[in-house]
Image (cartoon, rainbow, N blue to C red; front, side):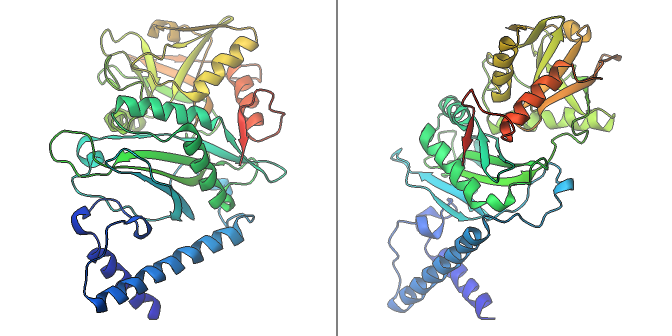
Length: 405
């Protein structure tokens, strides 16, 4: 009963301190405005902040105490969905354009203004990367600095300030350490880490947000596609477009993803795994799948759509391009006609979530092409094994692609 009444008091006190920032995303520890209230209320408010501090400290201590243990989760049936973990990292940038020191907070809800830039005008970008548990108990990240660089590139396109590479990587590391017990056992999945950069300041007319929030949260995940490592089945979309030249298709902004839902849901009802999009102008050149890049293989040539404007420069995509060249394949980044896909020896998708996923079939305008995905010699199998062995620490990292947390 004491805890409940204290929590209610805390909520009332926090409400009384919002002032002109009402609705903007602030935590109690980040509020900087002075509290103006009667002496009696001031004492109560101080008590509230002390209570919240104790609650946060208690949660932090629990994470520290449990950080080396593994959470009680059904690791064999994780799927790819969100779960509440222990902590998230939060950092804010005010109107002066300066980032304030970030900190870990207990995982919880965000408070934003109804007129926040991200809610009204979609001013937001995000990243995705994974932490893997190794057989000797370490946690490894895969090329996090590449995610940081891509966020900086995307932020420039969306007129947003971005954290530096070092700040980004440090925030990711802190989040993984604070949620270490949620990193799945070896071979059972990974801890998916989601950095977000969003405009949380209030706006009414179309303009940049006056305030930004960078936050990082995480959740344990399994396979992205329900097929798991089995081949997926794609439908080539002939009506809807994912991106246009001059737009934001090459940036990992939040406004790129809602438009693909309609086509994706329709395709799944028809029994397909996902949708492959064509260019919006001629509707004949491959772009990408809803959330991953695509490659085709023909003889000794590996080709993928060039990442210019409409195609996201995936980090796994970049790895495949480097690996393919080192293995003696001829690598081509160019326009890839859909007819080439239908005549390819093999096709596969790449991305942080899917890693490397073989394509079992492609259906275009009623014509279905099946790809042979049997045997360990298929190209996608080689790449998948190389990357996952590296990510899980099963092989030595001679390329400097992994980062220990």
